[in-house]
Each structure stands twice: as C-alpha cells, then as structure tokens.
Length: 457
Image (tube, rainbow, N blue to C red; front, side, top):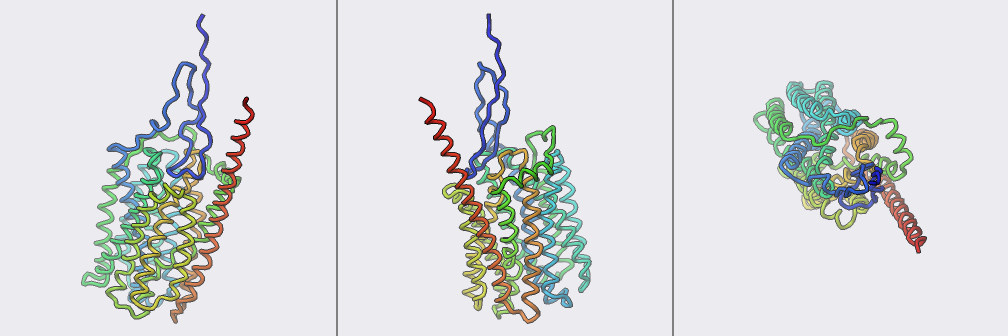
C-alpha cells in the first residue's frame, strides 16, 4: 500500500541584515512533497539574459533623465540667481530644486503602491510623457516669472521623475538576487552620469547663443528620446501579487522594525545637509572669484567623481557589507561638507569636489541596497522603498532652502556649510546606531543557533 504524500512547506528563513549581495525571502511557502527535491533558490532568478540586461539599461536611462537631471539643479541655481530670477533670493530659488528632489523620492509612496499592483508600464509611460511636457513648458517660462518655473520644473518635472524612480529601481529585483547590489549600483550610476552630462550641456546652452528657451528645448529633446528608449527596453518578469501589499500594514511592520526606522530617521537628517554642495557649489566657486570656465565645470568634476563612487560601491560593499559602507560614506561626506568652509581657490575647490563627489556616490549607491537588505519580504520592497523615500525626502525638501536663507544676499558661505555639516553629522550618528542594532541582532541570532545545536546529542 502506497503511503500518501503529505505536502510540506519549504521556508528559507529570515535573511541576514548584513547580506553583502542582496537579501530577501525568495521562496516562501513553496509546496514540496516527500519525494520531490527542493528547488535551487538561485534558479528563481535568471541573474542575466537579454530581457534582464535591457531592463537594466532602461532603468539606467530613467535614472539619467530623472534623478540625474534633478541633481543638476546647481546649474539652474546659478543661472536663475544671476540672470533669470534676479528679484528672488537664493533661498526662494532653491525651493524649486528642493521641491523637485522631494517629489522624485516622495511620489514613490504612490508609484511604489501602483507598481506592486502591476501598473509598471503605465507609470513608465505617464512619467516619461509628463517629464517631456514639463521641460518643454519650462522653456516657455519668462524671466522673473517665478511661479511659471516652479510649476514646470519644481512640480511637473518632480512628479514625472517620482512616478518612474521607484518602479524602475524595484523591477531589477525581478531578475537579480545574487548580483542585485552590483546591478543596483550600476543603475544608480545613471543618475550621476546624467548629473555629469546635463551640467555640461546646460551651461553651454543657457550661457551660449541659444539662450534659455532654446537651450531648455534642446535638453528636453534629449530627455524625451532617452525616455522613449527606456520604455522600449524595460520588461517585468514576475506577475503582481494577487493580494497587493497593504501600505498601512506595511507601515505598521516598519514601526516595529527599529533598524528600518533608524534608516528613515538617518536618511531624513543626513539629506538636510547632503544636497547643499550639489546646489551651491558652482555659485560658491563663482563668488570666490574662481574663473567662470572652471566654475561651469565644477559640478561636472563633482559628478564624475560621484559616478565613480556609485560604480565602485557595489564592489566595496561585497567586502565591507552595505551597512558598514553607509557609515563610512556618510561620515566622510560630513567631513568634506564642513571642509567647504575653507574653499578659497581653484585647488581647494577641485579637491573638495572630487572627494565629496566620490563619497556622495558611495552613499547613493548603497542606499537602495540597504533598503533591500532591511526588507525581509521582497513582496513589500516597493512599499518599503516608497515609505522610506517619502519620509527621508522631507530632508531634501527643507535642507537647501534653509542653507539658502542662511547664506543671505551677502553670501556668508561658512554659515550654511557649518549647518549642513552639523545636521548631516546627526544623520550619520543615527546610521551608526542602526548598524550597532543590526550587529546586536546578528549576535543574538547566532547565540540562538548555538543553543539549538547544543541541545542535540
């Protein structure tokens, strides 16, 4: 008489928080029988292939056109202050860029939820069309018409990039697990490459014979073409969950997850000071009497170094672990942020741009992998990314306007540099507390495993 095969469940367990190459529950509740072999966990992810790498290329281009364009606002900050919005203060002008950056991350709370429900392609198409429309509308804005520029660049472009940011990043998890951190750092490098190319293009267009209107149109045409290519490249692999993630339930889980709460708090505080150099570095060099030619390329130097930091972050994290690399990057950014007080000549500006750009790139490169590392259930990754981006994004919203107000019309540079460095230091301390909690939890987990092993004869 044949024995009846009883279904069992294969559990992968909770991922370790210091997983160096991605984490998450891959197979949960997989039905197996006594006479069946458990599936290989890595077989659940292709780890490559044509569809995977074209999706990576599409995500790279989205970062290039979205976050990369937003972090190039330092060019607009300089141009608006000196030529186009001369009646506005530096603080008022920086609200345009900071609100844009805030929407890039905070709209992820909505786009992440829609992504979990299977609206990936809708988000990509609508976001691409809105980004193109907003930039072409920006080209129609008139001098000293603050509200026109704010609506087009601050609101419209920010919402467009926000609709695409989280989905284009989260879709990488459909194809990669073992290589996820490395691939995500490559995708993140798209924004730093964008922040390198866009300032070169914009400085030459806005300050050249084309002027503001035609220069912005040329930039909008490039963005539109690249986003079209991105939409054609990206493909999803997994079906959306039959029961979409409940954001209220996910938020309740986050509240009970102390390391994740510290991640959000640290991100909020750190980002208040993090974007100060990216917004004001070009204006800072000009006001210190450094040549206009170098000043136009100062952001390029910073962002080239930033790109190197993002690409190398994946390799470094494989040895140090993502949480430890986050601490090194944030503390280094604090030191260089405070070092901006000493900016006085071409040599000091070059050194500060290179070093700050590199460590800022390390931080951005490991931020998304850190979220994935602290997400035990990958089905909630979109929700957790949306929650984290939204709440941490308030730091980028208020940081540069505060720095602009502290700068005043007399351009007292040491005050905003000191403020940015001090508040970023507070964020770094929170990240250190997060890492200590992870280490403590890991030690408890190992102790429990030893107790179980010792209980067997």
